[in-house]
Length: 181
Image (cartoon, rainbow, N blue to C red):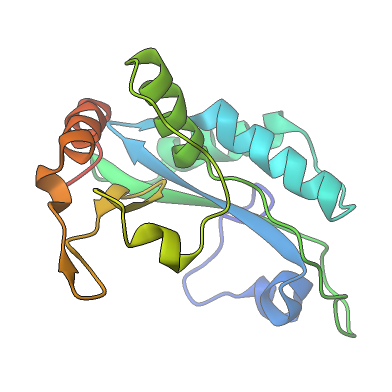
């Protein structure tokens, strides 16, 4: 579906789009579990923040929701799937200006909120690889996986999913429908 219009198989109006040619756009990847988008409002807020950083026009949240509802009404979908919202500057030639901007992830913020609510201490900062040598646990996160605990860093074995904090986060995220099926 593109701009609310269902696309035929093989059709690709994106072939002339700046987001696909020059990275002149942004996207949100949203897990849909049992027909419900996980952290929908947060993803739309992040899309808005990204659009402001890139000085792009965002159509508001209603068209995204209407497209999502139209998709669910017209397509048979599994219990778990991924919805990708893409915002582009549109068609056009030339090269986009490189930008050094980034927006913190939705899953990252959800984890930080949960840690705070669970009274688990957390420090946020910019850490170099040398700082991680002393870490008891390390994990990556994204909206689809939740967390991905690291089992080995450099020459050192870590506890991975058995780590004290990682195990608790994985258990919480399972209640959201994330993790192995």
